[in-house]
Amino acid sequence: VQLQASGGGLVQAGGSLRLSCAASRRAFSPTLSSYSMGWFRQTPGKEREFVASIRWEDGSTTYADSVNGRFTISGDYVKNMVLLQLNNLKPEDTAVYYCAATRRSLSSSNTDYVYWGQGTLVTVSS
Image (tube, rainbow, N blue to C red; front, side):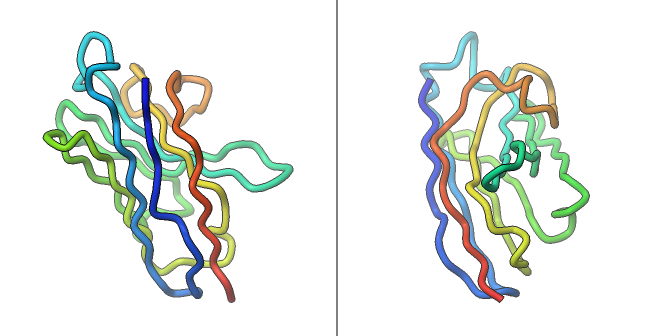
């Protein structure tokens, strides 16, 4: 399964970024629509932290409290893309962000995710 994350960068506090995750549809069994896609983030010395998840089937979403109201996850099923819009960024949002896929609907547990992309670094300066 291929998941390709991109879009990270350096931004000032209060700024915005948009992360993208491209999924290889044919690599998902039985179908991509049977999965939920998630974004996680990780900083050195800390465990990987849930950020947001979206269910392909109906577009339902869930967010971590720390990002709710600032981040928005969305999916483009035709393009096999999952986007994460990051607004009003704070220095504490600095992390490597990962996209992942799971058969467990809207899970916030990283142990439920079986497919992972490489990370993309987001750095927020104060």
